[in-house]
Image (cartoon, rainbow, N blue to C red; front, side):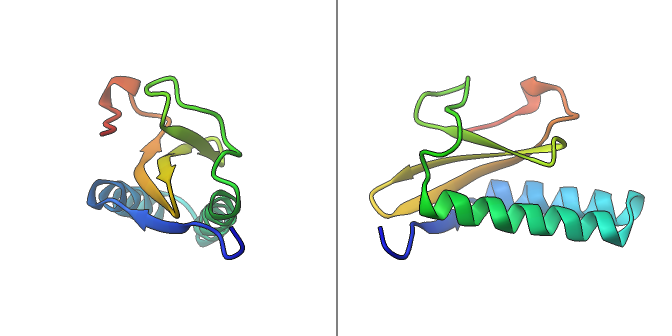
Length: 101
């Protein structure tokens, strides 16, 4: 695809991202926040251009996982011309808390 896949975030993934940003604002520096934002933007760009790039998740075969700075994982699936971001999961949490639909 010339322009790449359209990226859509689920409400759940946006909520997780918001919680992560809130935590980082309270406990990390502005530099670390900017680093996360930059890495997230870079990863989304890569996914948009080539959604097959990242490994298939161990949870479901049609879901893929991209690690963002070792602290977070982005779970997504794609079809036709769009990528759906399902979760922005903190890797420090118990994996049993991970919810993917």
